[in-house]
Image 1 (cartoon, rainbow, N blue to C red):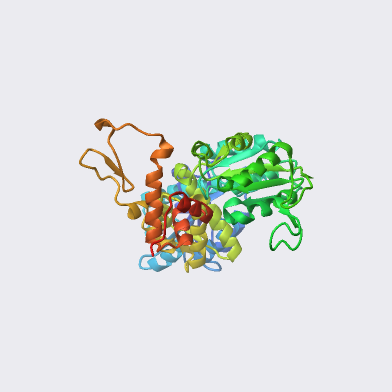
Image 2 (image 1 turned 60 degrees about the vertical axis):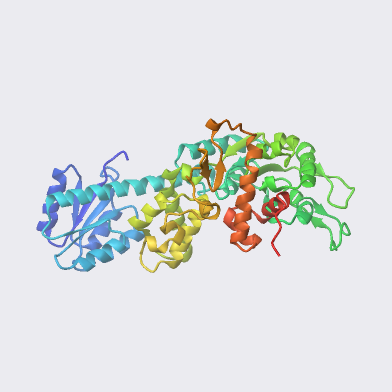
Length: 488
């Protein structure tokens, strides 16, 4: 902030108002006074640029025309970044509590102590500065990228923004890497929005959401009679994206046959629909995403090496939310504002809820945070969202994927000095153990984890896939790969 925010004192007793203003002026603040809520709203609405903005309002509760509670309600609608502090008489704490629920950061009881006033105003100024910076960041992102869904000030996200801007003007294929829920689809859309193709279509296709038997038909289209049930010609996603951008999500789930056909499209921008001998040419910009390491899949033989190097032209890595914890508050405010607007509600985030959000590990990343905030807005009955409005796993500080509860406790040691990680015993290097390639070494722990999850969910594939944070197609592949058979 280039200028210290001003303090507005609101009290119907001019002697009290001037006394408080003098005390805060002595602390170095610039102050003004108002006699009631109506006058305060007038002052807040007519601030000269030379005077600077008001950041804090210190208001009495009982005043004629417009009291302190009504003033705070009106401020939330027109001056949301201005932080209130309320003054109440002894024995009327219930009024102060109501004001805090409406957004006041603190309350003071009469008679006032200068030190208490100074501490409360200092805390309110910090809150105002934080809110103003958050709003400024959102507006900058909206101006820079044409969408405010990309929110974050962490240096990793700044790198993502720079890469989006650098690659958007080109036709180059982009590979987005990152865990599920990190916002890869939002980045793909930002690339399209910033590109010369912004007027063209933006088509999405998820390899993990389509049955293997329909993958090629959905992506490339088919002609009538190509297979049983193909009663009419079907336009595929690639053709639909002509002149625009095609975002292919979960490319790591693509079948070998699909990988081969996709390689040709990326090389030549040509293909034949399923059942057709007629070649179709397209002008499409490809953005692909994976939630697993494609290089590891190449090494294991699950993904074509030539296709990997074809799509790995420009790679953008999306950081998990746990590695940019400083953005949690920014994102929470963003989603809170979004769902309050959609549901026509007024809600603020309480300090206990904000602390719980910051302390949680977020295995589901930004998507899980968004769901938590939507849930909180839906279920909250009070103006201030508390920790009780958050999901149970978040209240307990536990992630949604309790791997240790499935596979055993971590941190155990074996008699030979080995360590247990997620219930899997890892031999100690000191005892002469020679490591095998990482891909091979992780197969057995992966098999145990999947089997334990299946048994814990009574072999319900859908619930197991959701718990392990993978799609059902990947789960079916793993069941087949590890030859896991349902008992009975």
